[in-house]
Length: 239
Image (cartoon, rainbow, N blue to C red; front, side, top):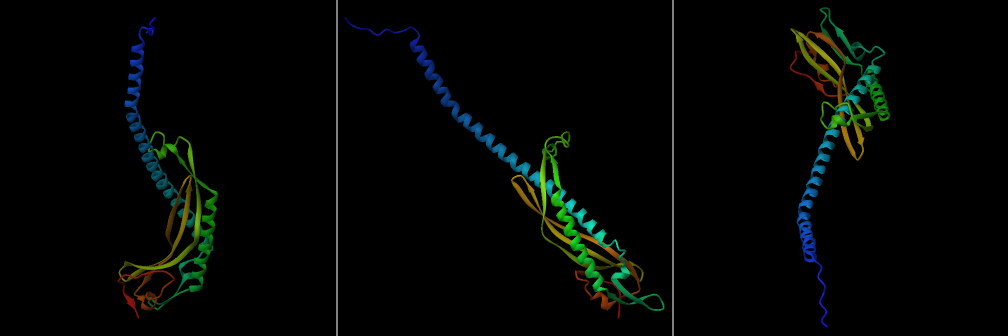
């Protein structure tokens, strides 16, 4: 008796379908892999773009807050009514022309020191604040600019505040010169965003006193420094 295997109808067809399915899956793998790589690259580029936007926005806000804090510190230092005559001593002749000018170094140094301490305190207070960035604004959407979850940003001052006193002259008309005294305040802030850190340099120059000098500016004062850079354009100078 010869045994013959029993062949079920449709068995060959089923095997062919399975084989074709496997072949199709193998053909899909490169395509799916390509899509996956494309999505990964797209998300990476989006992340870099968003990070740059967040950093730029944060630096602008941090610089604005620091400038405001420094201005408040300078105003507080001038609350005692410091005037130009407190910073510079002058002598005039019988015609009202200035013949002698001398910087009041003690008062100027005290003003710079007070400003530095108060600016440092104001900037340290910023560490208790935070900058909120609406996600819609990060995405550049005008419609969603004020919506969406906010990203918290911490501000921390780096180092100490530096204050320089600047001395500048400019022509104010015929035989007249305007003398400016200003404070140049320099500091650095560190902004900390989740997974991102950046440093923000801050430099603010604030005029604190000025006066119009009638006649030539005494040459001895033009050569005198008030502790910072002097700006002395071509002005008539006296002896």
